[in-house]
Length: 358
Image (cartoon, rainbow, N blue to C red; front, side):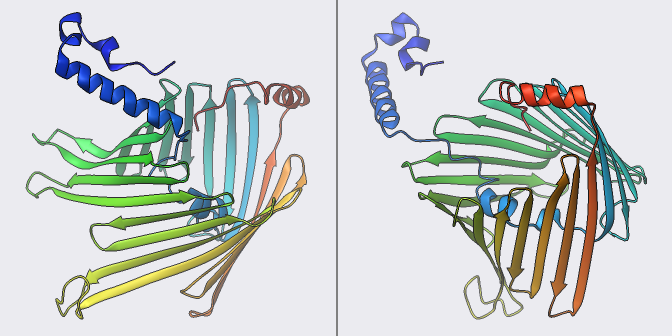
């Protein structure tokens, strides 16, 4: 769909107005200059450091103890599969979990049920190629253990606008919950600037709170740098670089400035300063992936994923805390079984099938 002009949406008696025509000409000139820059979409504010925090670092993939996953695909188009998960000796993983995935070019749904009754579900719906709605629901036995989150992402040619709401409610006679709006705009082919605003109110008897954050992202030929500044005194910066075709490395820095007991202000003598620096690397081999990271708190972590056979993958995770003199080890086996005709169908349709809005 081509870019529409402002006058296309105006009635004839307004279109002839000199002021309206001047505004329309200015907007058209601005759009033409913006189009000539050849700007690309910068992604979202939430994933501004995705290359480092989600692709290189292994924080979200760490586990301890023993784990086994058995996945059974039932269909390729639409995508439909279920997984049985077993774990032992890990405080962060349930002994048993059952999950299902369903996906089409417009819809993606995933649900996970644990043995203690905790249920988590998420889904995406693609209204258009540029507009996607996402939801996340979590429920657990006991009062106050439910959470719902709704995201709306609009992706333009050179910008992304997002609106997120967490536990929104009008049942108490007023609006409560957490609402986050963000906007990231490409300024040049390499530089993108954005901001994120948050408004929250836990209950009607408590006053609302708001916060504004600023962010920037710069993309080079083989590296990406990003930074975020929050109103509460938190500063985060990350740097990602592709060293070779199979090697990536990243550095992440988080600083917290909070008033201390002395009450000397944000940057005064009475402020408390805390920070964490993390460095990591990722190596992709033909049938395996190796990740390692080290942070300033003395924790050294590594993760190895090895594809032994086409349906079998083995994962080893290890972590050593030098300051606390503690070590953790995890071992997982993932097995995917599918009929031969289903595997052949997957190989024949993977290149031509539309992507699922994960």
